[in-house]
Length: 219
Image (cartoon, rainbow, N blue to C red; front, side):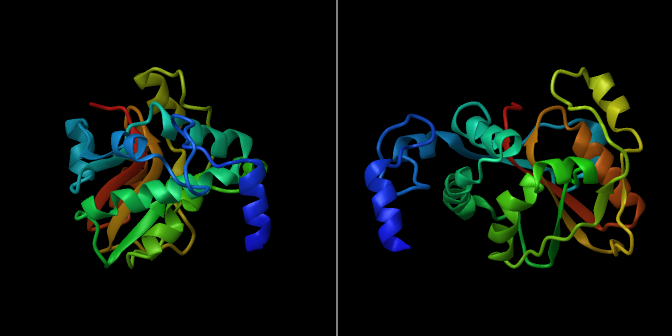
């Protein structure tokens, strides 16, 4: 397998996913692009959402640029070869993740079952599950999407809220009461998805909820 990887790297040299410069290994970024893209920050959110996300909503980097291409390629084209770049990015952010702690349970924003069958995976789980497990934070499917919804892209804030109304529910047999929840998604735009999911978790008795996304351009 190592020899095969070396042959592939020779024929198709690995590139930085943002600037396309040559890098040493597949999954690596050039140092300047990685530094420019990785930007762990607590995002500005509405007063209503802040009441649900006591731990705040955090993003690991800027969406526009390298992360946008990697996320969209994974979600819409099934490009799992993008995952090593995302894992490298997560490792680069790890030193700034003091808001995470063992004892949390990570809950991915769910896809509707039909959408997941079409895609073949939930991209949030592929991106975060292994990385979070390495920090002692298990991921559990405590939420489900109970009805299909339109894509949120291009919808107004009011349309997003209407689109997701009653779209999420507690998964069958899920135990939430008293747990510290890490609600995880790939991107955040308006925060509507987090709001709807957090409402369900709070209704089920979650103790404290913190939101985490890979990328956002909220400022």
